[in-house]
Length: 147
Image (cartoon, rainbow, N blue to C red; front, side, top):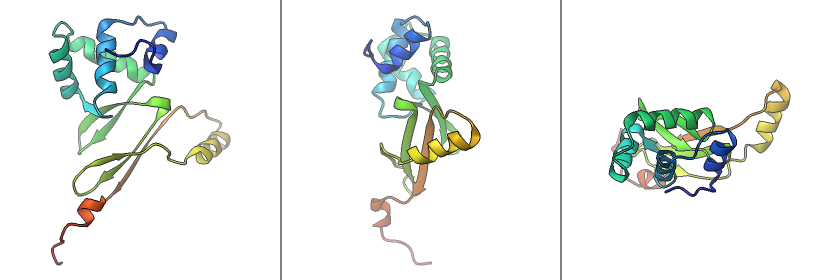
């Protein structure tokens, strides 16, 4: 089960929400899924861990976590929604255009750009998702058919 002192649990608590077993279970799955998970995958994991947690509870918890900025969504593969925890309010990855592999990375170097955008537009940016697309080294090394 998720650490009761994690930043996500702290956000829930500070917003006045109860720290329930279903919420902790869902957070634990999200924290240990490798960064991205679909609703179907999450439901399967929740069912395996605690069959007493219903679908409606899972989706209400997802909606709450999105509202509080704990979780963000991204559409991958055309129409599949993936849920991602957003530690620190940001998430970055490179997606291979050939094999669809995701390469996670930490420092996006956008600090100065974000500060400038906040100043120019009078906003306070709370988070960002950066997706870059290109061909990974393994796919670039594959023999290519002649055009």
